[in-house]
Image (cartoon, rainbow, N blue to C red; front, side, top):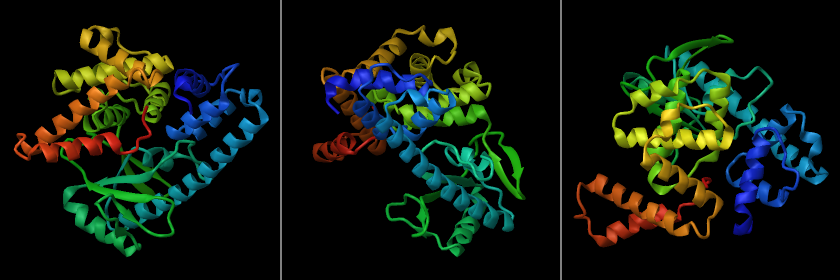
Length: 333
């Protein structure tokens, strides 16, 4: 996709996700951006729900429907995989906590699946149950994937990631029983907070100036279907940097999807600047490249110092870490 089209393609993609196809969209550019951000099935389903799918050019409609249908079949396979794992854990007396994309997969009606593209299945258990849960999944044929990225079986559509639940992780969870299975599901506030902390703080999008558009769309849908108390989330942030990151994400949420947020989110100059920086580099990737580079260098240095306590690892080690930060492919804009 030519860089000069990024701003227009992004605007058209957002319009489509909001159920209104752009009149003069460059659909090749829009589809390329949707594919990169893992939003192609959501684009189709959003237009279909809004009754606007007929306005697409025929070739665009056929491509979007093909991707949507393929993703639906994959999600149905992931759902069956999730239910099998939950059933096995329940038989051991373990009630797992579902995270991220596993939540809508479990809650979707039988025979249906959410349009969201889900990379893997994320489950958490109490620390005392982790060994038993691991053994249970191994009995189902799961084996650890190299690099500690999760567990997998050759026949499955995706990996399964099992981790120990932290003491303050998603308190209090809600027990949900469906079709004889029992799971814990984080309340809406915790689900929203997880996406924000994961992207802005853990992956450094606040410093790097990046936007995970798929997760932002997740937040917009969550806010539309549930009553998210953004003020309570602001109060829960541990320090000023975390609050700034949250407010920056909320400004992006309002900017792209029109979600109602507290007016005080835009009160601090640093938040307004960070929001402007993210939007500018997303829509103007060429002239915004120096801003993105500065953010990547800041994040790479921050990670190096956090891991080692100081720069004693040497400049060559720092350079390698920063290089990995810059070169790892990303679905973010």
